Length: 174
Image 1 (cartoon, rainbow, N blue to C red):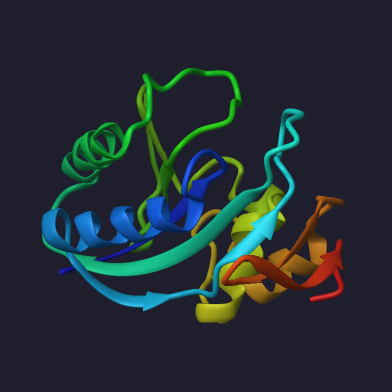
Image 2 (cartoon, rainbow, N blue to C red):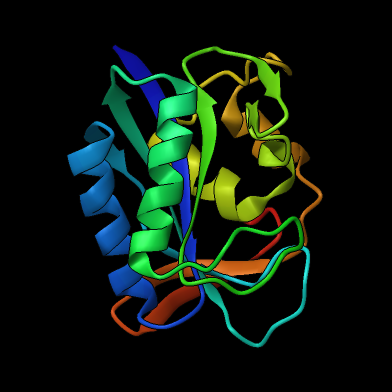
């Protein structure tokens, strides 16, 4: 069985509902959900929009290959209402990315594992650190808890709970 870490995000429509639907469908179609991080409300990364994101990281156990998981992710995103994926960053109903797949390092035209921006994004590192701080990045060979300290992302984020953000955190005040 494979241990896979996915990130989920939504900044359009019923953001919380979109994440919930995505997790349900991942559990049905891809594998067993082992852990879920808290949900974080975050500023957009890589583009400007007034719509804040809700982000979450999950760990799953699956027998599927990375290619099959990517295919299922695209179907799940479409089923929830995402329009065609583009290379530009835009607002979206749901976005699901494969962050890590065991200790695999893979570079194919449509799939790079570990995710190439994993170490640059607080909205991924903070929830991942919450549920698996000891996890070692397969390329950098350092723990997530250390990667987060080196992250240059200056965006604000906070733990989200039922229509309010508990605390906004700036940069490395984790």
